[in-house]
Length: 267
Image (cartoon, rainbow, N blue to C red; front, top):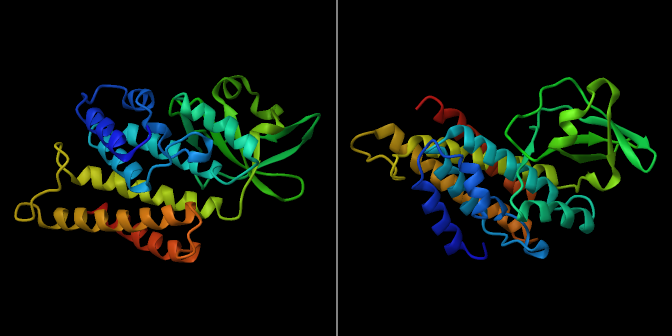
């Protein structure tokens, strides 16, 4: 994917598939799960509103697949400004070849890490990890110097780990978080939650309901669409370093969108 038009065409093709298709596998093969990869690392770095459109389209066919897409894009966003350029390049290369990521969620407790030879040892909690057929799982981490970061763990390693014994990871798989990485990734999560809500309110053909037939549902679809566009644009600005937006401004818009998400549950 190198352009908005290419991505929109691929999203339309995805929308035409049957609901029993493994949508995320198809999306990965079409390059749609890599559209948020920064251009400095070989990606198209397409607008967040386009990512929101993708998640909305997936929701209309499979809400479960949409949750997998949300988790993937949140994980990718956390990586955007964390760690070193070499670490990010190695991870993004995985995304570009179609591998899927999953974030454990912001309620997951920080995993404690300690030096272990040339790598790190993570003390994994007993909490259940997401089972979204991901190739890589992104965990929150804190090291011996109280620095927060993320650990990127392969599915093959997670399958054989003894929770009580801890998990050994090479240093390249542990990234120190940038100051704004988590606030922006949390905003992406709320944005894509709104996209899932919007997908649930739209018809199978992808249109918002006609106001004369479904008054409250149509109103919420319009409100969600407007706030998705606003929050997407603010995130875009922060990602490219625009001086006209800041994290505080993003936080205010995210709070408003969270309220809409909660109210949409009763529509």
